[in-house]
Length: 443
Image (cartoon, rainbow, N blue to C red; front, side, top):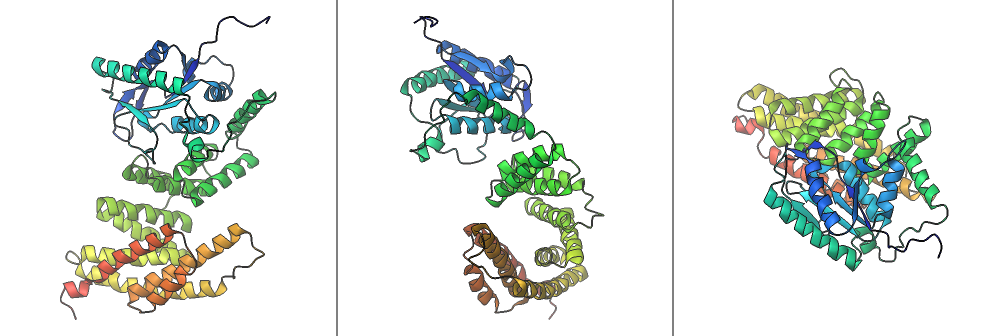
């Protein structure tokens, strides 16, 4: 047939990987990813494939379209997740969604899985920091070369998307295929412009990700939004929340990063109760990890100021818990302050009970006219009010806590909600077992 080559086109491999020297935030080391790429590329070429990485793509304008073309069209993709590269993880996800097979995941041995990769094969290599040792380079080259040969020949599904949804059909490119890729690139570019539509869409997506506890996805979206509108307080607040909830690259690092975002909102002088509640939450968790009295004091200040301003049950119940906790910590060094904190905790709880009962009375009932999302939101709100009443009752020694526990369970909450409440109450009961007055021998 005229116009066709008599030679079969060589298969291609696209390597998803960062460029140059990058810091691995999980280990603190700096890895030269270009050195890793040299070994990967040599193995790919030795297996008879053409190899390309994003920085080798010749293009005009943004990289989005040719990058998505490679992710979709390459016969093989190798994704290197070393240094906890969020971009690489995202592009790997796109590949798994678009193609059912021929994807290899590699990472440096220091990589700690951020989510469940137990069912996905991952090949590791050891990096010396500035380079890969000769012996390790040969071992990794040979292992990767064998994997490429086997995976390209087998043509078996390795995408978890297509594995767990076996009747899913991978996308087929029709006459409008090129236009579809262009549209995808345009969507990515649109997210970089601060028009109201893109802001609303990305904000809604971030809220949805938080609602389903996908904090890594939420953080990625909110980081982009924060760059677009760095002075929009609600975006900064959500970014701080998603950051510390993600616990990545480590719980400690996530909390420090979240605190940095909140510091831009002037928590010391702020009247914004959302900022103050988050400031308290971050320092409460920092205390749990560090046992640093400064973190505990900051947590108390955040919740205390938020409760004074808003008179809400969330700030109140957390303030009461932390006052009990601080009392236990200071009973020997400052006994008078310990007793004052203990008494104040009970006063706060009594006020929290009043607030919760008023909230419960004003809460509408679930009706058929509501959407499923509205019904779920209403049930969740009711659960947290009842769970707070239960915790307050435990703190006050009120036997009604069991009634509140039963009513809370009747709202059919998610397991994580029950676990969160049970954990907090268990900690509270441990504190209550040794009040400062008992430790000081006061009747």
